[in-house]
Image (cartoon, rainbow, N blue to C red):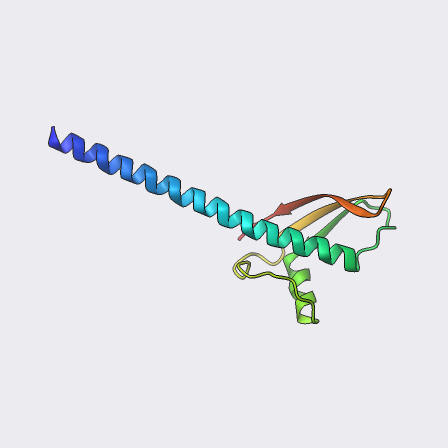
Length: 109
């Protein structure tokens, strides 16, 4: 009977630990996604033309890093281990006012 109680307690500890881990991981991913989203919108407003025929732009982490190397100041901390080409934002613009209307962030670290 004691063995069964110990196993139940261990099982509960494992479940709680895993729940905490995945909650913290999702929170960290959200912080990184917000960083790449903010940097991508700033980059878009500086460098992309709103007169092109396409309405979707892709801004990669590599593009943002290159801009930082040229003197820009995008906050990319925490994204050091992320893939330079797979970490990206897709920005869809509204041609009525030339401003981004939807930003999707794809994060693969």
